[in-house]
Length: 272
Image (cartoon, rainbow, N blue to C red; front, side, top):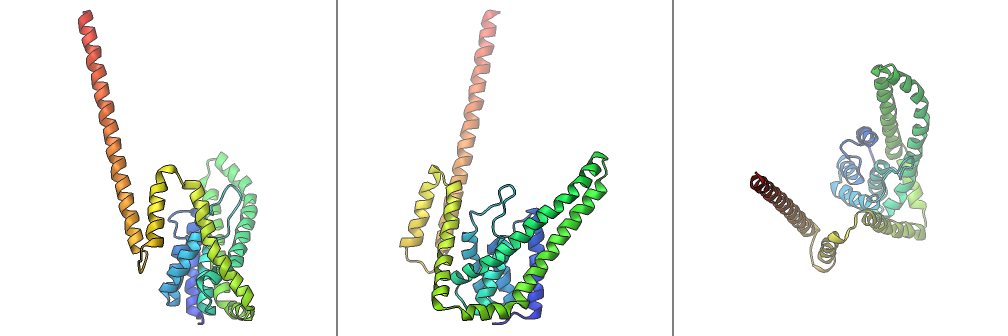
């Protein structure tokens, strides 16, 4: 399959919007699941976008920025995983392995911008000391615009301008390399999900984890919708139970306060 000029421009426009969202962390539409799904919609294969997006999202589930460090860029990973699978015909696992160099490329560009934009801080500190917000607003708009345009240019270049070279590279790879990429792509989601569980896994969540694992692995289903519905049921149950426990605690506290006030008033009355 071939990415047309219009599709390349639409992908670049989508990358601009998602890049601004990633820069500001506003609506989290920069996540690979959303980016890949929109990419598949633009390319005319939504099913492929959902498949590659789900796989890439699992791989990036536990990767979050920490201080000055930056994980591989999720926007380029989502776009390129779907685009590579679309243009080369490779499976989702191999495409996930092939998209990582593009993700690292954008990561290095963003890190370069972090260093370059630090030169503006002196002037912004003086503007803040003088209570002048205009330079601060202009600098923020300028930096955001530079980042947004960079996302658009990089995505357009990778998806449209470089697609022939990318297809030729993938087609020239020997079978053992593509097989290795497929294996690596299949392992990455498990690693990403494992990193996420290491952070958020608590003893009270273990029953939910076991229930979902059993439902996904040992119950014959055509899709994961029953597992999603089961998770929704667990979430609602936990929410209502938490609300009930909170109400019971509040009622117990109110009752205890009323008892203390009554006892205190009685003692005062006796003393009089």
